[in-house]
Image (cartoon, rainbow, N blue to C red; front, side, top):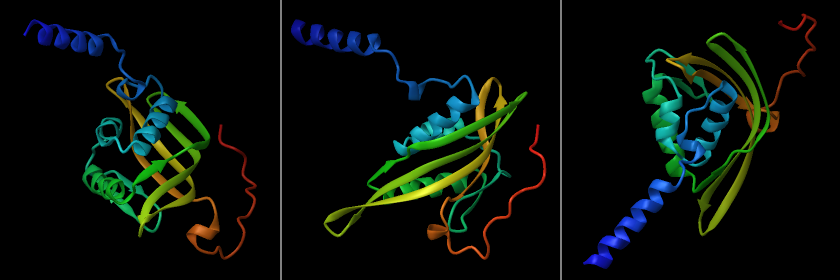
Length: 174
């Protein structure tokens, strides 16, 4: 009995002494919040995603393949389905630019959404080159994603383009 108690205390002390991981910590800036959301998505960590995303009923976000999400509930259902359907996710960020003005931030990001799905007896790997833009707001000191829009970086995944994009002649926003 004494050995059991001693063993339990050792295990408890070990867990108390281990620092929490970054995924459980609060991001101090919008870029950290974005990176944490991408990591949570890859790790299928819905509680962290929920904490970092606004739950306003009227927020609209757009995914690929014509997906439109209104409010947190629709987005949560879509993520649950994706997490169930994919065996594994990897989401390396290739480029991320963040702008901040007061309690608002917006970003442009390029990433590779790599999903592994079971195909018969094999594991099929698909790389989807994505780009994403979004808006965050600092609420009660915490950065939360309000709305986002994602699309494919390549016409190969999103369908053919009628014409190449025209170069912008307007000056860059300051």
